[in-house]
Amino acid sequence: MKKNLHSAYRPVVFRDPSAGFAFLTRSTLSGAATVEWEDGRTYPVIDVDVSSASHPFYTGRGRILDTAGRVERFKQRYGKM
Image 1 (cartoon, rainbow, N blue to C red):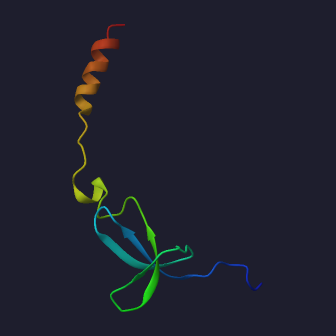
Image 2: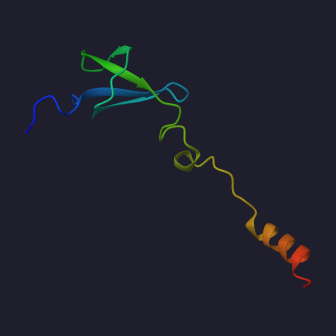
Image 3: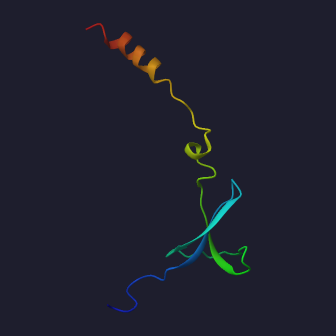
């Protein structure tokens, strides 16, 4: 294999500041900021906008769309052909 072809694969902390949630995983991304993790080591941190702690699908705070009402309105408008 060719050397220096692939990016470095290292531990990185992904943090969702809006939910106060963070997790440690491995990635090729690198952030300019660092954070001290629970194990006492310092890792690069990547701030994300949405995580499983803040996404409506995972938290159950999603909207339920009124699809039956939309279908009925469509039939009322265009059903008389």
